[in-house]
Image (cartoon, rainbow, N blue to C red; front, side):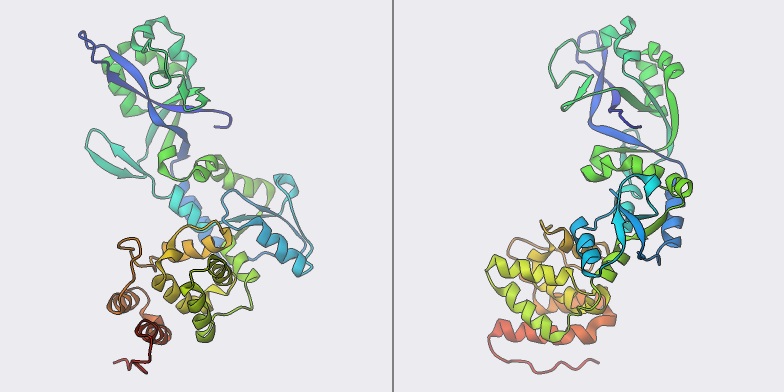
Length: 369
């Protein structure tokens, strides 16, 4: 649905004594319709490419579906003297980079509010009618149903700063409007019908909204241009190979994060972002929960990759309030529930934490049952 600004059309009662129904446009633009069955195909595809690696002598595109900072890939190529070039035109590429979590979070769990049942529906599949706005606004028989007040709140041809080109209604919404405005039946002949899941601006980030067309065309483009797809987590893992956070580095990072110096915080986040995640995971989880400010979205895109990996696995505690300092019992309960396999590595971190808060050594060892 390239170059289309699509509004979600509804009909509401005007409050007029004669109870005239008028057209209205929803608060958010419609990005498009994810075709029925496409989510399942993407899930299967992501599972198939989960082990793919970025290889030398390739031409790569860090796609809109990736979270990998371009500068990080560029530095990796230069430092390792790799023969990897970047491009955007699909016909010049052989490799695409995408982020699995970004796709799953923004395109695989789309919730819509159903006004009839008064419940949220997840990944609701139905038929949608999309038609040019001229079908409605230039038909004189609809004139009395269009609010004559010329302001941006009532103008059904504009949404924000964008001029609408099309309207979208679900098949149920179409039937409801036809019951109120019988002439609305005529738009069906001039509409295209799409079956699937409607994605609106309210369903995620602006990036997800803007990247919807690329997502919908991903599988076709991969097949058409014979492209290899690599998860950016795999690329990030290769880039970060070599730096492992152990208990000694944990203590250094703890001291930096304990500082009020913003420079120390940025350096600490950069070290966390550039380490081997899996082998350093226990110490990253410990720091992430001991310093709740680490859970805030950062201007450091590199660090945000780590943050999202932790958040997607729910490895961070819920922050109770600003300035919250989690107690020992809370940390131990959280670690035992979320990552029991790492307890033996996390326990020295907890002991270090208690002694630091006490400002002296009060615990030397905790023996696990």
